[in-house]
Structures are given as C-alpha cells and as structure tokens.
Length: 102
Image 1 (cartoon, rainbow, N blue to C red):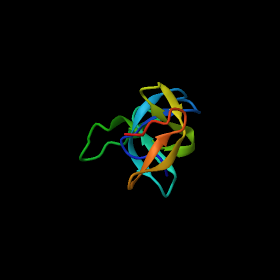
Image 2 (cartoon, rainbow, N blue to C red; image 1 turned 180 degrees about the vertical axis):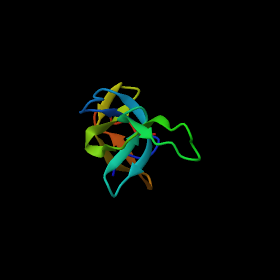
Image 3 (tube, rainbow, N blue to C red; image 1 turned 60 degrees about the vertical axis):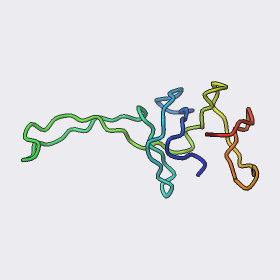
Image 4 (cartoon, helix red, strand yellow; image 1 turned 135 degrees about the vertical axis):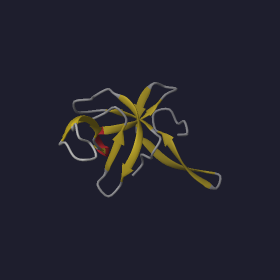
C-alpha cells in the first residue's frame, strides 16, 4: 500500500469527493484508510451504567484506498506516486511533479 499514516490525501470519488484530509490510520489487510473528516457516520448509543444518558456519537469510518489519492500541497493537485531509489534509500515520488513525498 503506497499511502501511509500522516499523509495528506484527496477523496476522488463518493459522497465526500474533493475533500482533503489527513490519514489517521491504515488497514492494509482490508485495503482501507481512515481519513479525518471523511465518511463520518452517526452511531446511536444505548444507555448503559457507564453512560446512563446514551446519546448520538459521530464516528469516522474507513474508506477504501482506491477512493483516495495522495495530495501534493505545493502543486495543489492529487497525484499518483511511484518509487525511486535516491542514494541508498527508496523514496515515494509524485508522478505529476516529480517531487519527493515528505
């Protein structure tokens, strides 16, 4: 998976199309990522002893990795990424600009 925790991504399809957010968690086995402010659902909680009032909680749900692209803040564009060898290190590079991903 080419997207890592802490990357800035842009949603390219779905209800939140065009939204830019930071990746909070990555689930490689499921091919999903958790993006801040994207795919937020409301969960109704039943009253319990710990939470006697119950209530409604907003919860961020994972999005499939194919629905997001890495976002280049300098070029202000979403781009695919490729790997290159720079010196002794393997780095991620934006295909549109050729800039190295932080």
